[in-house]
Image (cartoon, rainbow, N blue to C red; front, top):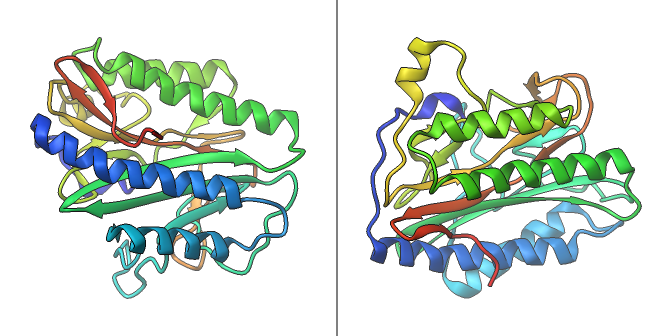
Length: 269
C-alpha cells in the first residue's frame, strides 16, 4: 500500500484477537484458492472478481478493497480483488481483459469478518509461461518465506527487510519501494508501514524501523520487478505498472508473531 499512510507505532493483538483474524484469513485463503482455479486462458478478470464477491457474501464477510479511497477520494477502488497482469505491479482493476497463456497474474484480496481483517496475495504464471517469469515468481515467494521464517528470530524489522532485499538482489531483481506492507487488525491499514527493503539513511531508519514483539500482526507483501524498481500509475488512478514495461511479481501473507512463533493468518487450510 501507500508508504505515507503510517507511522511506526503498532497495536499489539491478543491471542483471542489473532484467532478472530485467522477466521477472516481462512476466507481470504479460500478466495485466493478460487482465484487460482479460475485464472485460465480466456477468462475475463471481472469474472474472477465477481466470484470472490459472491464468496465473501456467502460468509457474510466485507470485501475491504471495494470502495477503498486511495489518493483521489473521488475514485474509490471499484472491486473486491486487485488483479494485475504482467507489467502491472499492484492495484489492477478487474475488467473485460482476457487472461492469456503465458500471463503473469497477481491476485490480491482482503476481507473483514466479525470486526477483524486479513489480507493476502498470490502470483500465478498462466499455462506455458516463459522460464524467466517462473524464476521471478519463485523469487517473490522465496522473499516472502524469508520474512515468515525470520520474524520470530529477529528483534527489529530492518533485520528482516535487509535479508529480503539481499535475496531479491542476488536473484537479479529489484524491490519496489513506492509501496510497502502494513500492520493490520480492526482496519486493513494499521501502523506500522512494513518495507521490503532497508532505508539507507540512518536518520530515516530510526523513524521507520520497529521492534518485533508478540502480538504484532503484519501484512507482508514483497513486490519484485524483473527490471528497474521504478513504477508509475495509469490514468485509471489505481493500476501501478513498471516504468520499463517489464514483469513484476507480488505475494503477501498476513503474519502474526506470538511467543510460540509465527501464525500465518491467511494460510490455506
